[in-house]
Every structure is written in structure tokens, then in C-alpha cells.
Amino acid sequence: MKLLLGSGGIRNEEQVKLYHDEMAHHFQGIDEVLFIPYAGKDHDYYLKRIQDFSVSSGIKLVGIQHAEDPIKAVEEAKGIYVGGGNTFLLTRDLHENGIIDPIRNQVEAGIAYMGVSAGSNVAGPSMQTTNDMPIVSPPSFETLNLVPFQINPHYFAGQIWIKEGESYTPHHGETRQDRLREFHQHNTTPVLGLWEGTYLRWNGQTGELMGGNATVFQAGKEPTSHDTGTIFDGSLKSK
Image 1 (cartoon, helix red, strand yellow):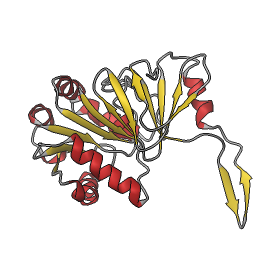
Image 2 (cartoon, rainbow, N blue to C red):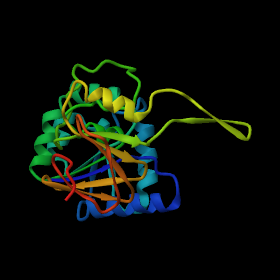
Image 3 (cartoon, rainbow, N blue to C red):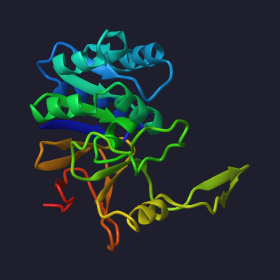
Image 4 (cartoon, rainbow, N blue to C red):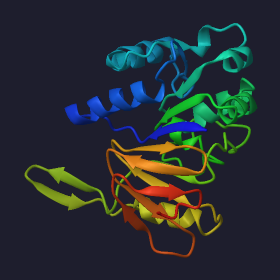
């Protein structure tokens, strides 16, 4: 397997360069990659935005929305890129277009898969560790199950502080850690919290963190922090 899973939050020059470099490396030798924009409402606008943002990678992206048969488009794809946005919307449309199993089959057969933000979240067994608002109702929370752990994109530790003039006040809302602890009150699947600008290269057995940090959550255990270069196995134990 060949997966590149990113958190998103790509803002500064260093993060943009890493995005282009990782994308070019991941899809090396592939002349055309199928882009799935289902996490947004305007598919053509989204495709154009990601095409423009990705141009320095040298990778050509084509939108699945232009295919007469989305299942056939997946089955004939040489590479797949699932973009970010709203995970509920993305999961609904993956199910409704019947491409959950075709994507899984293609990736298990060896084609390269890239996901960013929501596209990373759905690479896990379910979308249950999303940060998004349930704007639509998917038929199931089950997703691609390409990796044996959950992903929480855009992870950060601690509370949110609100700037008021020159001072800051705490928001007092739930933290990401609180919400992931709630997930583990009902589920045992480990969770990888990807900090902004971070990627995981996954080969089916192990994964390597690139470009940033991650926090691992295991049911009944305290979270652990990990730096760029850390190698994980499928249970998110570091090697």
C-alpha cells in the first residue's frame, strides 16, 4: 500500500513546499491523478482551486465529477487524491456514488492514495474522529478502512484562547483531547492526532511522520507526543 495522509492547515512557505514535494514524490511516474472533491459543494470550483494550488508539484489532477461513471473512474485511476472539507458530506457522497469498496480495492492493489484533512479522516475505519459539523447525514459512518487506526486532522493541544484587543481570554470549551477521550469511552481503535502541516507516509505495515508532529491516543492511556521521523506500526506504537 502507498498512502500519504495530511492534516492540512498549509499556510507558510515551508508547509507549501513540503506539500508540493510530498505530492510529487508520492505520485512519481503517474501522469494523471483522480481528484475526489466530494467534501465541498461546488466540485468544479474546488477542483480548480486544488489544481492551481498543486501546480508546482507537477501532478495533473482530473475531477471525478466529470466522469460518466464514478466507479469506473476509480477502477481505472492510476492515483487517487481525496481533498478536505466537510467529512459528513464527503462520507455521504462516497457511499452514494458507490466508490468505498472500489477505492479500497484499488489502494490494496497498489495504487497511490493521498488524503488531506477530511480525505485523511476517511482513510480510517470510520469518520467518527472528524472535527466537522453534521451538515448532511451519511448512510453510515464507516469509511475506507485503509489504515487500522483513526485520524484526527488539525489536532492541537490545550484550550482555545480568544483575543480581545491586546489581551486573551480562555474559551472554556471542550478541547480536542476531551473529545477524543469521549471517543475512547465507546471505541478502542487508536487515534492519530495530526498537527497542522504534518503528513503520514503509510506502506500498509508502518508509517512515518513527515513535516510536523502528532499525538497518539490509546483507550485507557495518556496521550503521547511524537516528532517528525517517528515510525508507527498499525497499533500506533512507535518503533
